[in-house]
Length: 394
Ligand code: HEC
Ligand code: HEC
Ligand code: HEC
Ligand code: HEC
Ligand code: HEC
Image (cartoon, rainbow, N blue to C red; front, side):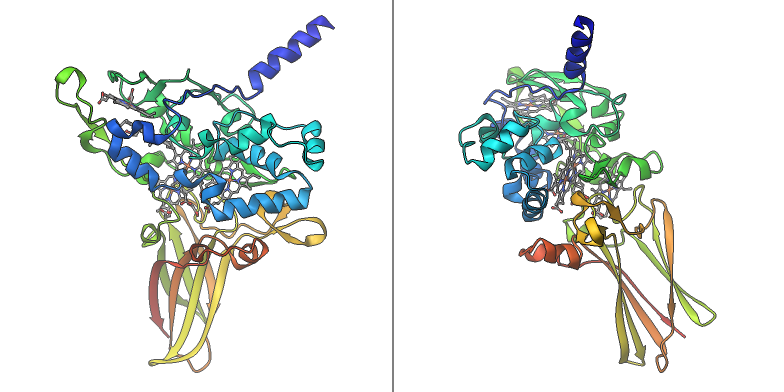
């Protein structure tokens, strides 16, 4: 019995997320500004800085929806999603007792309530998320992500790419996942996201092809600049090889131009639309319900005869085949994304009276179904980002 208890205890310590409080000196990016202004500005424009529910309508509405449909308190859902969206949260799970307190309205001022509303997590995936990772447990079960996959450095120790960095404000430590194997760090969160029913609706790690690193594209190429403007002991600040912290991705319209390639050809009575993806991960990828639109305009000369749109998106269902969002899904429709370093070919028929067809590819962050389920208001969710266009005569 004693042995059993001991074994139980060690496994919780080993596999449970361990919280390390971050001293106020390091909690938010404002504290880093005097010496790392460029990086703080770049990061502020990234969607990592918007991963907190206050700053992302889609995320906020999704949590409310999950809470409503699972009859779990909103705070419990917030704690659950914080695993990757706010990993410096001080409470990592909630139990039945909390649910009861929440229903009775007795949770105000509780540990959980304080944790989800704390200013210290309001920046989401900020500096002290990535730069306080001390260990990544690749040997853990694939399900364990975000906070459950890492160990934190002591407060005030920054993990970085340089072996010889010295700072007057914080300690520094080098780890290979900061320069040699950065994908390992990105996959702490960008992999194996699953629904409450255990359906894995995204797994970038599994679909990844080739040896390119995420940072080469999403943090741009290495270039010469200072990592910190602080002059150690009156010396000049060191010139380093640095990257950009804006993590430009799917929310930035200009990033989509030419992200996929489009080729049109004729085959018998049909037109073949070949969409190829030179990137090392599928597109759309990552979060579910993203959408690629294929718009077809059939023309005779300049006159439009007919137009139609094909949507390449994944749809999710719950009980009794009711449409839902990825996080609640029991089932998903066939994967229509364009595979990493691969292609998808659509066969479209010709239209009588038309002599040519014009094809436009674009991307949307959220498909119609989920946008209406969640009642998203901000225009960005329905905005089309242009990818490519071509025309063929027949
Ligand atoms: C999503 C993870 C992530 C977040 C968030 C993040 N960084 Fe980084 N940071 C990295 C990676 C990865 C590198 C290494 C890039 C390389 O050189 O390949 C890096 C490099 C650095 C460097 C070394 C110089 C450079 O630019 O390469 C400094 C200094 C730094 N980060 C500071 C910060 C500060 C300050 C913040 C918050 C405003 C921050 N980082 C947020 C991942 C992150
Ligand atoms: C008083 C100035 C100062 C402040 C404030 C400061 N840093 Fe630094 N930091 C430095 C200096 C100097 C370096 C070393 C630069 C070099 O060697 O090129 C550095 C290096 C780093 C590195 C790279 C470490 C490595 O080993 O590669 C990271 C990451 C970092 N800082 C993060 C932060 C974060 C996050 C904050 C805010 C919580 C912060 N810094 C606040 C001065 C500062
Ligand atoms: C602690 C978890 C975590 C880590 C580690 C992490 N990310 Fe993220 N990342 C997120 C979350 C959460 C979002 C979504 C934020 C939102 O949209 O509200 C995101 C968003 C992004 C986006 C924007 C995608 C879009 O749809 O516009 C890019 C690009 C990205 N991450 C790249 C990276 C790269 C590259 C690394 C590794 C250097 C990395 N991330 C590490 C959690 C993480
Ligand atoms: C060869 C360049 C390249 C590499 C390497 C790369 N990406 Fe991307 N990624 C893109 C392009 C291009 C897009 C589509 C336009 C955009 O969002 O920037 C994209 C989109 C994304 C998106 C949004 C997907 C969507 O459909 O909404 C995420 C998240 C992302 N990348 C994360 C990562 C992560 C994490 C890695 C490493 C495991 C990585 N990327 C490696 C080029 C790259
Ligand atoms: C395994 C880590 C992980 C967990 C846990 C997680 N997310 Fe995310 N989430 C991400 C990453 C990484 C992205 C960015 C991927 C992308 O942009 O394609 C993201 C993006 C999103 C987005 C898209 C935001 C945007 O601006 O487009 C929504 C909505 C979202 N998550 C909702 C949730 C909800 C609700 C929960 C809790 C029920 C949750 N997530 C839990 C990792 C996670």
